[in-house]
Image (cartoon, rainbow, N blue to C red; front, side, top):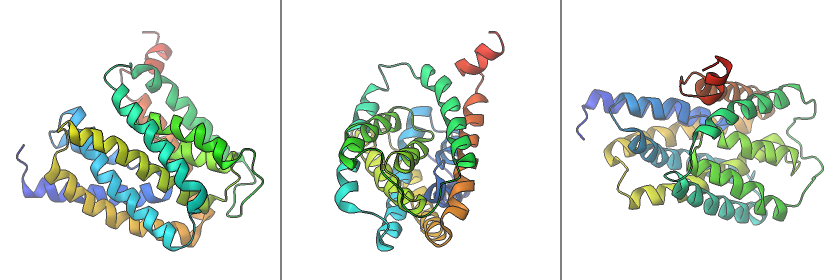
Length: 261
């Protein structure tokens, strides 16, 4: 498809802003996917192209957290591999399984996560006691959230973060760093399938990728510097925004049930 330079520049700017927020608390897709749809992409191509720019953003954030020593590679890398396998399964299941049920359930989970991070008094930068082992997390939470990321996507980073904090006892900065590694792994796995299917619009995706990479550098450095002071409120904001965005869709089954349709 053909696209003018002004629209391309605006999409690059959207990628930069989304990359900034995504590096801190996730939720960048709330901005990038609607922007791609407004630019004229069909829904499947928009999702595929969004994965391309998202990979660059999460890779950028992962690089920053790694340089700051906030990623425990030995225990996190196997989790990332399992997240990638789950994501590939989710991407393959898109054409088979109905997404309506997830669209109805996810807003409730997002509000619950927002409430947890808003009310829990122990969310801080220091690590706490683990409830499960990294191996158990890698065999359960990582592939399940990875599947969701490949199949549906919104709020996947929040689910990773919730698991890291509540089950692995990770401090919020270290949890954010690990989440970015799992994010980039699951995004890359589903992107590979989209590339093989020829669904990625490369000129748009690469311009947005530059913006996303730059924004993620800025966001991740701010997160590392400020810790829970910036991550916690933005995470709550993103969770609420995801819930509102999904519920705003007239086709959302939860909204239809509430309105009696």
